[in-house]
Length: 456
Image (cartoon, rainbow, N blue to C red):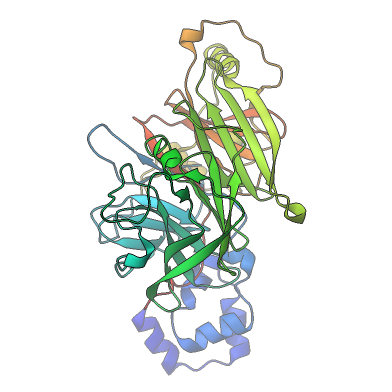
């Protein structure tokens, strides 16, 4: 890149001609060209050659996930359509860090938290290491509290990003190191949150004031510290953070305020109920899986019109008979043949590891690349399915994520099969085999072609 920049300085080209040439590049190359020199960046930005739809295309690349083995956490993996182009390296082996745990994501950027916090753009292979956060102010009384680390980024608004460390209740309070007791309300009326800004390249502690009631007491929260992992959503300038019981913090980043929203559970969570927060076509959604005999599955939409903050039920289904019927379809008719590549929806998704593809897939790469069509390839209409089978043989169902732009959720069934479930039409689509020991954290990934990460 340095050599290109040197030649760019030696060969002055009129801006009109340069804009014409650069405008013929694909978004990924155009974004990279912004890094050549200031003159090129000014032409690209001034002529608006890189549109917001190029920075954040409305298409899904695949599903990133962390596979948790009995002994250790493996590096991240990517499950996607084998003909997805351009190729994105899911190994992340270009990152100079031993611990590659993905803890959060937002609009194409990943947040890795191990010994340090790293922000990474897999589409451009750029990453930056953040400075260590300062200790909490002693006046906050939150020494020893946990942190839910959240990433906020919207390339259509600004190339800058922010990282928020939202405090959560520990399993045990140290009465000598905190002003809180088990009877204290949570979240507190004034919540101290450490925030990193890439624009200033420093951490600061901000106080967010609560509007409305608390979610409960610290004792209420401690009952759920082992049941749930934290899911967060960034949507239109607000962070939605799943608290430890059945509530959600909605943090408005612009005015320093937050409010507590009750989840759709209507009661306290327990170990058999899993809540997943995400965003899809119209805003913030919530998925609930009840691990009972029938494996009840629900999708809720958060209606924020006129400031209501009310949950609207979009889908409610018992997945046990659906999975039993799916097994019968799989056994009787078979699933799409991985060697039939003429129809894109007959190509099962696979693990994408660098550029390692089998010959059939490589031959398929010669075809025109289009996005996977979720309106085709459905193999099962789930509405009103009734199957008599032994409840002991019902297979498990787990949540992989919401499609960011369609009313679709991705599910992992019996630890070996991934499916897309259209909760607006109640149809099931086969994606491919996804064998894993256990998926600890997963999310649908949309590439971001922004030219450079904000860094010091």
